[in-house]
Amino acid sequence: MDVEEYYCRLRNTFPANPEREPIFLSMERICDILSCTRRNVQILLTKMMEKSYIEWLPGRGRGNLSQIVFLVSYRDIVLGKAKGLVEKGKINEAWSMLEMLQDPAVKSEIMTWLSELFGVKRDMEEKDVLRFPFYRPLLRLDPAFVCRRMETHWIEQVFNTLVRYSKQDGKFHPQLAHYWESNVMKTSWTFFLRKGVRFHNDKIMTSRDVAFTFQRLLTSSPAEWLTSKIKEIKETSKYSITFELNEPNALFLHFLCTERYSIVPEMLDGTGSDEQFAVMPIGTGPFKITKNNESMLVAEANEFYLEGCPHLDRIEMWVWPNYEENQEKLQSDGEDQLVYFEAQIKESLRPALAQLEKGSTFITINTAKKGITQQMKFRQALHYGIDRQQMIHELGGIRHKPSTGFNLEDTDKAFYNDYDTQLATTLLEESGYKGETITLYTYEMPANDQTSKWLQRVYKGLGISLEIVKLSLEELANPEIIMKADMILSGEVLGEQPDISLIEMYMSKNSFITNHLGAVDKMNINQQISICLRYENSDIRMGYLISIQEELKRNFSLLFLYHSLQIVGHHQTLQGISLNAWGKIDYKNVWLRNT
Image (cartoon, rainbow, N blue to C red):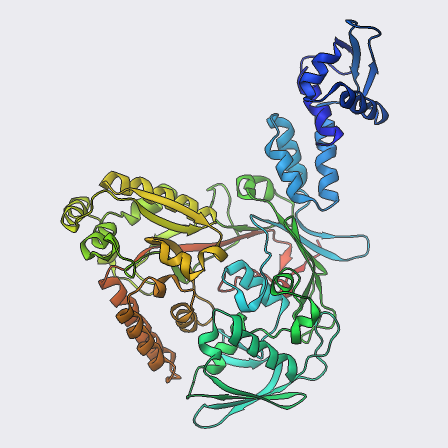
């Protein structure tokens, strides 16, 4: 602890005593309060005097009391300490200090001050800075290993792909490649790169960087299933590259548009390990990361971006674990705020943008693991025991409506109206369940915490003992960990190309769904996906993907729960705001209107 924390401990011991009135007490009492030796107490009191926090007149002789006069209020010390930590960028230390505050009035005052720092601010140099809170740090911004929506969203801000898919017109557009072509069989694809594109470290991008990106994906990424279909990569010139495939793939271009295939510099440009690159990535995108730690992520505009410099000069994402509990402060009138709603929505607040998320929250049941989860009747009992409408009613927040599949168009009402406790109880008895503990794994996320506890309570009412195991998503994505879980609570958000997102979800070696299936079911999915890759028509592809989904539902190995809302609150002075498939804002289009 520093001297301010010791002062607060001492001051809080005498809350009824006003400032500038003497208090008489023994050195032994001070030692007890501060939990320090006599020598250390003398050092601390001297430091407090030097900072003009106290006046101290030590007692002379054994048994004589010392005199202390408090000169500064507890409020002023705490407020000054919090401001000092924030100004130094030590946001996580500031939150830790706030969590320990006992005085609600002081805590509220600090929260108000912090809230006023968020939004878009124009500094003395006419630079526009967007500052907003998020509940966790983002220390894994490596396209090769991305597995969460917020990280995926930031990768779009930092990197570029060879080509870009537009959901508005359903067409492909140039990005790092200005032109591309393929042979009739779709087994050979050549891309011609833009000249003069610079990485954030000023290095010129060439075909060597593209080749390195794909070779790296082949050797270390969960998406190696696609790159393994590449027979050869030819750097035909400094600014052209050809991919020779093992078999026809009409969707090759579609996959190259996804964030995982963002181009990184050759050898990660000497940043060291994958872990170091994930924290401080180097791309060619509209924003470059200049700071990233447990407290905040800072990105600055790339003045040389190939599509033009962004309007915002700087973005700061501050890590605030429970920021949603302070929504009223964050959306106070007159502030140019931007707030992502991840779990809670208060009725008094009216977010400016909302859309129904493509995708679903779901439970996978491990049929590849020996035990009760291999019994069909047990899996059926788990399904019939969930009242999805009641879950949404009780938990509220971003949960919008029961889901029967990944697509919003899936309207199998019989599926989510299947709630029947009597049938669930009968099936449970017939399954041979003996009360053994069933493990439900999930990853750290506010909505997952709420949903898993709700399921635990509901299943307990049926007589099912459910143990919740919460891990980071990176830990949970380990196939060995996946196989330990009897069930996994997760969700899938479909990107700008929903069918491509589903194919990647099923084919990833870290897939919760696929890893929980037996060998025959896995083989069936692989066969269906192989057929998908032959068709350029997305409706035909989606038909095969829906058949996979329906088979998983019939087998009760995949239980769909609900669709969520994607909500962003923002002030009217923020312009150029729209939601992407991840429910996030494309920062390069945001600008501040002068009022």
